[in-house]
Length: 420
Picture 1: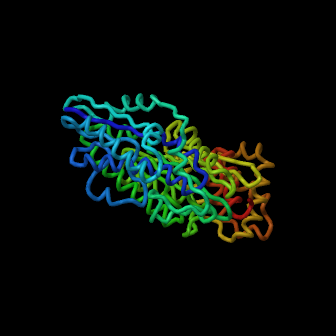
Picture 2: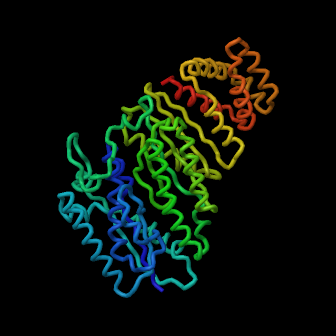
């Protein structure tokens, strides 16, 4: 039997040119829109990926179609697909008021049709071919298509953003003038779809996960840019509408992902930036946190970087596979409530840990000695109200055994409580 696999790009190149949230949404949504239109033309075929039913075509508030598709082909489908691609691109060109040639030359849409055995796994077999096709990048100097996705202040919405209530003012996505860009990506997906009989179930599970993730981001006060397959990209404030942190949101999304796909996990790259920080740099930082930090070693991690107004930055990685450390990290985030007093207290604590770094490294493995250290240096009457916090901190430190990780965690807490 024959299968067709198709890939579309250049996604990241297009995203990097965006300077505002609406531009970023348009630059992402256009690829999902094109894939959706192509899939709809062949919806009677058996799709391996993405998940296809009549309901998926009714959703237009967020891009849910990722950059690849695979379906079981029939005679003449390759030629029909070629014509379909041109029809869709011509429609896009008309809607964006650019030439068909501009759109065709900019977009990298490649497909392949292969004969596979009845027991073959279409995704595993076709992925190397599609990877190779993506490397066949034809550079164009004409940026007319990409420029058509941009918008100036006061411009009307184009067909990609119209009716979607996309927030274009980054300040509205901030907490105390700081916003997050979050990339998420599935780990061990190859294991999840290794058996051909699991593919359909996983594709459907990914579709429902993307819908749930979008709703979770929206309720938190953020804005989804893309949610397709196991990929997720969104804006969010550092603290949400329910007063929980960005890490609580990521944990909720990860739990839903693992519930839907137990064989896989989800890693996150988080870039936290001042409101005037260039969007393309924030996007790149988030991507680096994900792929260069979180998805290393055993993956299943949260890597974050905070870049302050002053230009100073700090970062760390929380490995979720170490369940004890991860849960203690999340719990520590919930222990402080009174903003002003806590800011002063955290500043003092942060300074003390920095000053006694060598000593603390020697006693990290010993909870009793850690308690003695904090009892000795924080023994004033006003510190008694922080007893529960110190208990959680000592527990976290002893489990982590990584003072740099602890230091970055406390810097984040200090940052959230007002030290910008």
